[in-house]
Length: 287
Image 1: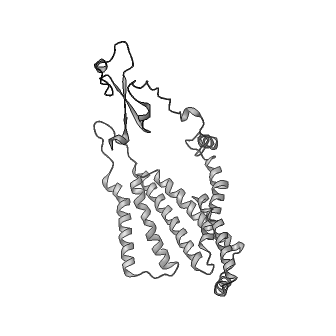
Image 2: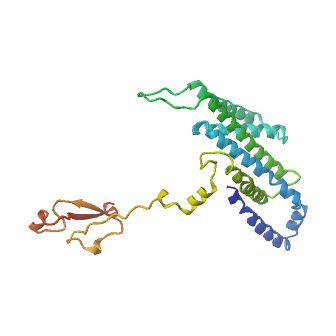
Image 3: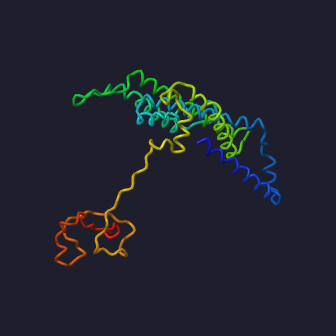
């Protein structure tokens, strides 16, 4: 995701070059560009903060997904709307209307019901003599807490980006996306991935084993992804003409009379021949 956002930087440079070229013959555009804040090193560092919020939200929500069901996890992510509304009202100073607050209240109630649904339903009952395996109450509480914390970090990212784009900084959108991708890729490469190779896990003793990842990308070892063996084909019927062979065929073995022959001798298969007649049918012919 971060690596894909990184490609917004070349696009930002190209768009700024086009605007600078057009401003030579457009005084209004030149005056607008003069009023815009200059891109400084401090601005670039400020634009890297959303990458930290984004990465933290992903880590928290993925960790929460390991303790709760995916259906509950998806619904709990809707709580980000509640956090964004509260921060827009009290942090950014944007006044929300009454109908917006009613919508926020309904969403908050729905998220609370989703969080309590597993507690209300209890543990699954065993069926047909099989013991039902389900998450314990502590796992559910941990998963719900981690997911809500992840949505809160995601809400911080949204509010921060809006503040950066509309405040005194007024960063260009393409530059914001590109710098977030740059810092996100840098943090993942330098910090997150090395830590994943140190923290204990179930991938050769750690969370992410780098040699195993490289081997999977390259397609090795071969035994982990074997190629399908070639299926031998029997010779076709002598009455079948090769020029009628369609591009997509399916061979059907038949021990009955060949439909392409009108001779009585072909009504029964020869006992000396061990290969039955093959009838070729086309998928396109059925249409």
